[in-house]
Image 1 (cartoon, rainbow, N blue to C red):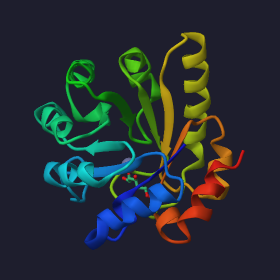
Image 2 (cartoon, helix red, strand yellow; image 1 turned 90 degrees about the vertical axis):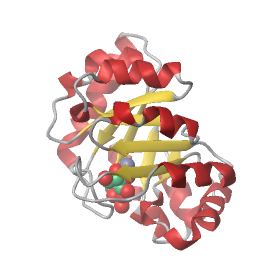
Image 3 (cartoon, rainbow, N blue to C red; image 1 turned 135 degrees about the horizontal axis):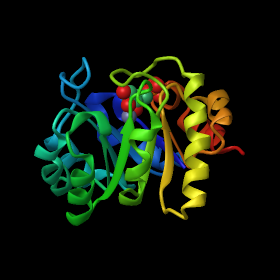
Length: 210
Ligand code: DX5
Ligand code: ZN
């Protein structure tokens, strides 16, 4: 599956952009929420998610790069997040937040910074519908893909198979036609600058090629 990140879309025309990528074959819309504390950048928040939900024909995959996500997950779900992913580094009790997300009716996801060990998230997988592997330092679109993170995808694939878990593997950061091939064990590709920087249909189709 492909989830274009609207961080690289035209923010003055988000409805048009979302409908265009959906028509071009996107499966989900990836929404990057940054608070200027967890990452050195600020993007969008709850009111924008609420507006996007009204016009999006496909699910919203919301990636929270915020400190203390427990304070905001209820509002993000009320606003229409379908998948809601938190960073393991951002809260004292990630298990509790993941349970809270599921109880409130959204699909919980866990993610980690490139320098965080996968061991931090493995015990949380049974609480998740999604695990997101970051292949850039979170904070900005348009960065280069970090090859050394690919091993996390392979380890996750074995863990999910061995424990028979129902957890999708998503990869985010520096994804293009070429780097996506190196992540062939992932289920969902997030791509911002790659999709929004060229013809949407051919970009999305190139990521779906086996
Ligand atoms: C980075 C975000 C990504 C970003 C990806 O913090 O999580 O979703 O938008 O952008 P590209 O695909 O340009 O690396
Ligand atoms: Zn993201």
